[in-house]
Length: 144
Image (cartoon, rainbow, N blue to C red; front, side):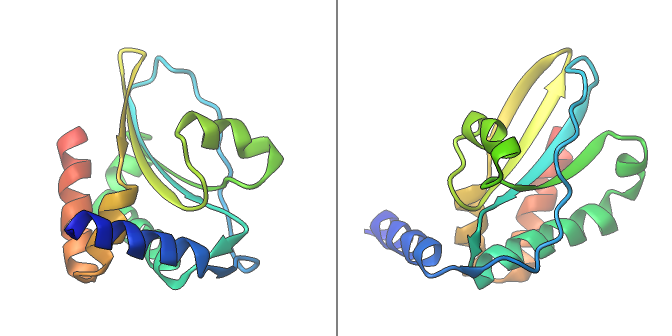
């Protein structure tokens, strides 16, 4: 029953999204796959709800505040991607993102390990900012 409730909430959030025109995006930069790194990718579309905006904001805050050295050394890369743009459709398809999504991709020795945190993100927003930030930070630290 809990899973059905979560699925319903997720669908309602996706359907009730508003305009995303004020979004500033950092489009993906192609890197070679031989560089070890962790990429955090937040995807958004033409429409976005308040929760989607919170996920983006909290993700940016965590990366900026907790991982500045890793960002400086390119061990952690944050990408904010408009998945509705033609030039980003392939990357959105690769990670099976429709609308909003949060992916952590760990690259090690040319191999990619994908962690889809979309459901985690929406589920933990209902419990509050603190829980989202703690869970996301713990996951990211475990991948470094």
